[in-house]
Length: 287
Image 1 (cartoon, rainbow, N blue to C red):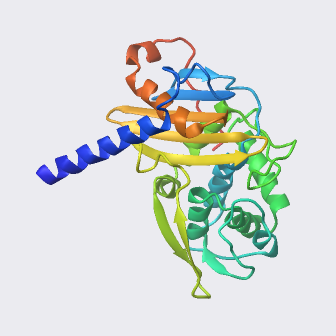
Image 2: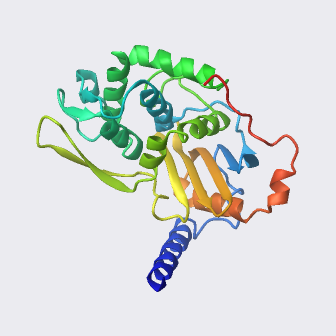
Image 3: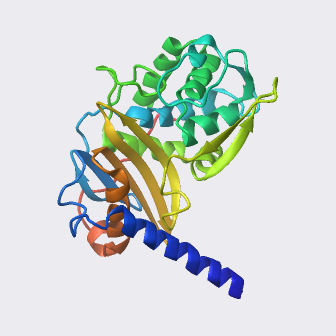
C-alpha cells in the first residue's frame, strides 16, 4: 500500500511539473490569448468554447475518422500489404516499404500514436482498394454522424481547400471513436513496437500526444499539425467522476494552453457547468 501511494504521489508530481513547464510564462488565464477555435466539454456539457462551429483544417485529427472507419470495416488481425501510394506518402511517417505486411492493429497504432501518414494510407488502401473510395466512406460516415460542417478529401489530413471540420464536430467524432475499445486502448498508450510479418523490420512508436503519461488522468486522443491548420489537439482526461474533452484548433503552443484549459475544467464548479441552458452536446445518430 505504501508503494502504491508513493507511485501515485510521483505520478501527480510529474503531472504538476509538466503543466508548470508547459505554461510557466503564460498569462494567468489560458483564455486570454486562446487558440483560434476550441471546445471544452465536461461530462457531456460545454464548459467553454470559441468558434466551435467555424470550419477549419483539421490536419491529422482527420485520422480519428480514418481509424473509426477502418475499425468498422476490417478485423484487427487482418494482414495489410503496404501499397505503392502508402510507401510514397509524405509528411509524418515511420518509413514503411512497399510490399511489407503488417496487421491492421499495428498500422492503427502507427496511425494514432505516431500519426504516420504511410500507415494511415496503407489502411485506407486496404479497406477500400484506394484512397478515393475510402474518402467517399469517410464523408458518408460524417453525414451519418450528423457532422454537418465536416468534409474530407484525404485519409491523412494533408492541407486541402476542401478538407475542413469544426471543434464541435471533432468532439462528436471523438466520442464515437472512443466507444471502440481498441481505439481507446491505442490512444492511451505512451509507446510500443510493431513488427512486419514478412521481414525482420520493426518500428518503435512513441505517442505524439505529450499529455499521455505526463498530465494526470490523460487517456488520449490525437495531435495534428500542418501549415494551414496550425497546432491542433483533441485531448481527454478523467479524474474521479469528471471527464474533460478538449478540442484545440490552430493554437500557437498547444502544450502550453492544453494543460491550463484542462486544469480550469477540472477546477470548475459542477453546478455552473450543468445548469447552463442549451450547453449539452447533442447525441449522434445514424450508427
